[in-house]
Each structure stands twice: as structure tokens, then as C-alpha cells.
Length: 276
Image (cartoon, rainbow, N blue to C red; front, side, top):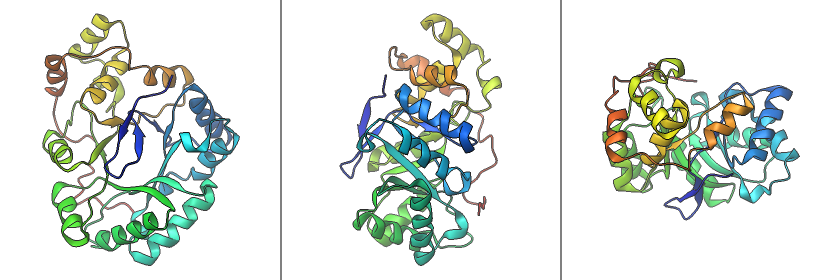
């Protein structure tokens, strides 16, 4: 089982659901990622700051799945913003991953107080032009930040990975993305898992469709055409997370889930949050 794919604005393609790898480290992490690839995951999401790029790279080296069938994402840390620092940091990530190219490279956080994300974006454009990166995007950017990138460089990201879940559905930002050909990716797609998965609207839909509450929430992301990247060290749970393409939610059910909105859960307001 593999996820269907979306076309990105730059002509590349991306699976509709991916594997988050935060916390999947060392040999247990390698085995978990390798098993996930064997189970059908093709979008693998890591970051410099996760400290596990080498584990992701080892799993890629061991898998029998063709490299061209995988979409490998990593992210630039805040302390490496700036033109030359971006190029140097990317080479460090690429070396740890052991890859000829990276499929999707993201600015992890904008860190606006440093005011270097536009120069960073220009460096990422250079990486794409050199063929070292297939697609470039950002993470945790607001609409005004995206508009500034376009205004000052002429190029919008093809992906913006943001906190997105039923408690924080980000309708206004998603609408902007849709209007400008930016694909939304959802980090923390299951929110605070235990609390969200006990919400009556979620449990009732799970019973109606004969699926788990987590599958209902992940399917909700799919209905929004956002790409969830759930992470799990448990193989049974990982397989279930991928198995959300055999049923569909009705529009009113999607709206009922979005009505759980209450705001950010993790305190990461891009206008003020700094992550180095």
C-alpha cells in the first residue's frame, strides 16, 4: 500500500501522506524507517535538528525500494540562516543522508528577529538550480512571510509545513496556499493524540466507518488536501496511519471535525518563536 500523489507547482510529485521521523534514532530508528518504507511509505520527513539524518540515510541505503520512488525531506535549522551558511548546512545534511540529491528542502522556522530568511531562500533557489534539491519550501511561515519571499525573490515555496490538526485547522492560511499553488503539509497532525482521539465527533465517525480515531483524523487531513506526516515507533500504528485511502468523509463531517478549533497547542507562533 502506498499513498496517492499530488503534483507540485514545480512539476515534481509528493505523496499524500508521509512518515515523521522525529525521535527515530540510531539502529531502532533505522529499523523503524526501513520497515515503514517496506510497508509503503514513500515520503520521509527529517530535519537537521532532529539529529537523525544519518539514521534516515542508512534506512534508504538498506531498502530495496528505488531511490527515485522516495521523497526525502530535510530542513535547515535557524542557526544556519544566511546565504553561505545555508549552502554549508545543506551539504552537511546531504552528507549525513548519503544522498546525491534531496527531494524537498525546507526552512525549518523563519526566525524573523534574525531577518535572514529571504537570503536563506535565495540560497535554496541556488541549490535547486544546481540540481542538488528537487523542490524547495518552508515550514512555519505566515502569509505575510510568504508574500515577502515572492515580492523580494519572485518565487513562492511549493510547500509550507505548519502545525495543523482539528484543534488548529488554519483555514485562512490553507486558502492562501490553495490560491497560490503551495501544498500544505501538517506537522503534529494528530495534535495531543490522546485528547483529540477521545473527542465524541472523532469516536463517532470512527465507529461509523469501522476505522480507528487516528485514521479519521488523518483522513480529515486528506480531505483538506493537506499532507499529514504522523510519526510512530509502533509498526502496527504506522501501518494503520497509512491505511486511510479506503474510505472518505462527507463535507459536513470534515466541517464538524474542524469545529473543534481552539488554536495552537505547541506555542510555536512563527512571528515570535525562535528555533536555532
